[in-house]
Amino acid sequence: MNWPSVKDLANRLSNKKGDVILMNKEMFLKALELLSDRIIDSKELLNDLDTQIGDSDHGSNMTRGFTEAKKKIDMVKDKDFSTILKTIAMTLISTVGGASGPLYGTAFLKASMSVKDREVLVGEDFIKIHENVISGIKQRGHAERGHKTMLDAIIPAYEAFKESIEAGEDLKIASQKATDAAKEGMEYTKGIKAIKGRASFLGDRSIGHVDPGATSSFIIINAINDVIKEG
Amino acid sequence: MVGIVVVSHSNKLAEEVIKISMQMCQSNELKIAAAGGTFDNRFGTDANRIMEAITEVDTGDGVVILVDLGSAIMSAELAIEFLGDVVAKNVHIADAPIVEGSIAAVSQASIGATLQEVITAAEDAKNYPKK
Image (cartoon, rainbow over all chains, first blue to last red):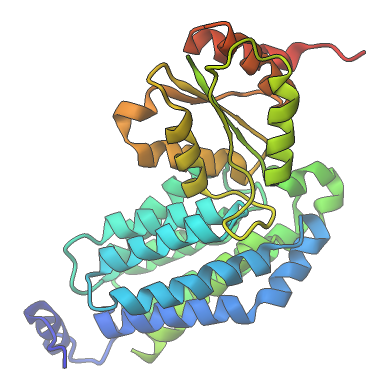
C-alpha cells in the first residue's frame, strides 16, 4: 500500500472539523478517472451541441482522447502528479484531432507545470492551476471571456474558487462554488454570439445554443468536484 | 532551401494543395510535406505529425507552415514549441490562405528565396484580388 506522506498526515491531523482541505493522490487518480468517464459518457450530448454550431465531432474527439488518456493514466499512476497530468496532455494533443486537442492538451500541460513536487493539493494549488490553465488556453486559442468558449465556464469557476479560498472556506465549499459558477458560465454561453472557433462563421445564428467546449469544461470541473465532495 | 509544410484537417486536401503548388516548383531540391488529418485518418490535426513533417523538410534554411483553420493553427504552434527554441526560431506559420499561400511559398522557396521572403510571399497572397 501507499503510505500517506508526512505532509498528508499533518494536514489530516490538523483537520479536526472534518473539513475537506486537500486532495491526496487517491482522490487525484479518482478525479482523473471520473472526469474521463464523464466525458466518454457525454459523447452524444457533446456531439449534438457541436452539430448545432460546429463540426459535430466534439464528443467523438473528446471521447477518443480521454479513452486513450485513461489507458495511459493506468501506466503512470505510480508517478507524481505532474508526470500524470503531462501524460494526459500529450495523449490529448496527439489523439483528439479537433481544436479541443491542443486546447485541453495545453490546459493539462499547464496544470502539470503547476504541481511540480506536490504530494497533496490544497486550495492554493488549485488557484495556481486555474491561473496557469486560463492563461494557457487564452494564449493558445487567442480567446477571451465572452467569446463563447470553454473560458466562459473556467474563468467564473476560478473566480468563485479563489474568492472562497481567500475567505478562509475549505476546499469542499470552494470547489462547490466553482462548479456552480462553471455551470452558470456554461449556461451563459447560450445567449451570446460566438467570436472564436468555427461557430463564429455562423454569426448571430450561433446565439441560442450552449457552447460545446464550455459544456465539456463544466463536465470536467463537476467531476473533480464530485470527488472532492466525497473527501 | 526553405522547406514547406502544409497542414490541413484533411490529409488528402493537404496532399492536393501540394500537388497544385508543385506545378510552380523551379527546383528539384525543394522539400515539402503534408501533415493533414489525425493519426487514424479522420478530419483533424495532430501536433506529432506536424512535428515530423517539419523535421523532414528542415534543411537548416527555415520552414514555412501553411495551415487551414482552428486546430491546424494550434497544433502547428504546439509542434513548433515541442521542437525547442533552436529549431523553433526558424519555423514560421504563414498568416495566409492555404492554397494561394502554398503556391506563392513554393514559387519563392524553389528559386532560393530567404525564409523571410517566402513568408512575405505567402502572406501577400491574402491580397490577391479576386474581383
